[in-house]
Length: 125
Length: 487
Image 1 (cartoon, rainbow over the protein chains, first blue to last red):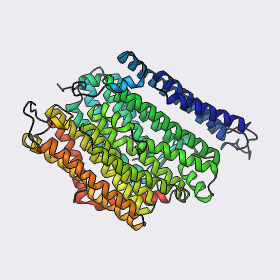
Image 2: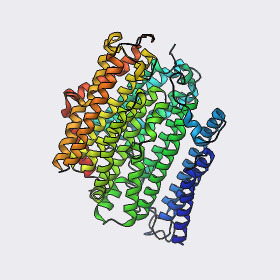
Image 3: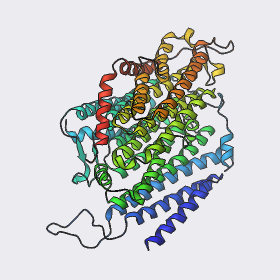
Image 4: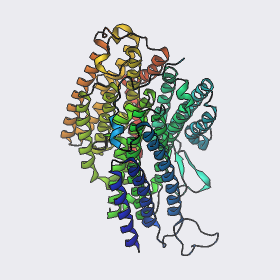
C-alpha cells in the first residue's frame, strides 16, 4: 500500500513538473496546484502509517493504543491551506498578465523590456 | 521583560501592525506614521531580544499552546537568529526612513505598509522558530507578502517579475516541504534540536539523504545560489526600489539562514558529504555572478547580481564546515545584509537625481551631491572589500577559514571573484558618480529622507568596519550554538 501511494505521488509530481515547464501560464498555474497535491500525498505517506504513537496519552494510561500520527495530518492540513492560498495569489497574477497582454504565453510577459519610461517614478508630495 | 513576550514581539508587532495598516491604508499620511511607529517598536524589541540572547542566562524559549518543549511549536532566542532579527530591524528602520521620499500616497493606498510589515514579521518568524515545518510556513508567508510588494504598481513588467518569483518560489518551497515530510517520516519529530539530536547519533539512511538533498536545493533556490539564481535579478528589478532593497537584505539571507540551520545545525556531521556540493555551488555563484555584474548597464540588475554573488561567499564559509567557517559565514551575512540594502537605496537615489537606471545616462553625482556620494562610497568600498570597512573583515574571515581547512582552491576562487567585484564597483562608481553628467539630463537633488535612510546603514557598516571584534565574538558564539545544536 505504501509503495502504491509512493508511486502515485511520484507520478502526480512528475506530471506537475512537466506542466510547470510549459510556456502557458494557466498550465503553469494548474501544474503548481497539482504539485501541491502531490506533495500532500507524499507527506501523508511519509509519516501517515499507523504504528508510531502520537505524543499524547490519556492521564494514567501508558499508551494510547493503535492510531495514526496526528502530526502528519496537521501538516497536510496546513499544507493544503497554504497551497490553496498561493494558487489563488498566482491565479490573480496570471489574470493580471492576461489583462495586460491578452496572451497566456510567458514569453509575451518577458518581452516587456524595463525601459526608464515604463518604470513609474512616484514623487512624494 | 517576560521572555515569551520578548520573543513574540519582533513577530507579533509587525504582523498585528500589518492588519491595522491594511485597515488604515485609505489614509496614506496616517498609515505612514503608524507603520513607522511599528517599525521603531519592532527595532526596540529586536535589540532587547539580542541583549537577552547574549546574556549568559539559559536560552529564552517560548512554546505556544502550553506544550512541553520539543513537542509544541515555539520561538527561541538562539544566536544566529537573534542577531539577524536585530539586523532585520535596522534595515526596516532605514527602509522606512528612505520610503518617506520614495513611496508616495498611491503605493501606500495600495497597501505598501501592510505588506512591508507582514514581510518583516514573517522573516523574523523564520529566524526565531524552533520547528522545521513552522520555518516552511514563514517562508510561504514571506513569499505572499513579497509577491504583493512586487506587484504594487500593477504594471506589466511587474507581472512578469512576480510570475517568475512566484513559480520559482513555490517550486522551491515544495522541495523544502517534501524534504521536511521525509525527515519527519524518518525521525518522527520536527523540533530542530530533537531532529539534530536524532540525526547526529544515527547513521544516514536513504530517506535522510534524499531529505537533505531536497532541503539543500530548496533553500539554495531561496537564497539564490547558482544554478538556482536566474530568477532573482529580474524579479528584484521589477519591484519598487525600497522593496528591492529590503528583498536584497532579507529574502536571500533568510534562505541562507535556513540552509545554514539545516546543514550545520540539524544534519551536522551527517552533512559532511554535502560539503563538496555546497563548495562547488558557492564557487560557481561567486564567479558566475561576479562576471555577470560586468555585463550589466541597468543599475538594479548590476546590484541584483552582486546580491547573489555575495551569497556565494557565505556558502563558501558554510562549505568549509569548521566552526571558523560558520562564524565567517554569519559575519558575512550581517555585513552583506546591511551593505546590499544600502546599495539598492543608493542607486534609487541616483535614479531620483539623474532620472535613469541606465549607467550610460547617469553621472555627475560627485559634483551635484558630495554628501550623498560619501554615504554611497561606504557600502561600495565595503562591497569591494577595501579595509577598514566591514566587507574587508568578512572576506578575510572567509579566506582564513577556507585556507585553514585546506580548501585553497575555494580561497583562490573567492579572491578572483573579489577582483571582479572591485572592477564592477569601480565601473559603477565611474559611470554614476565620477563621469560628467550627460548634457541633456536634468539634475535634481537627492531628498534628505533618502540620505537619512542611507546614513543609518552607512553608519552601521562603518561601525562594524572599525570595531569588528564584538560582531566577530557574536558570530563565533553563533557558530558554537549551531554546531552544538541537539548535543
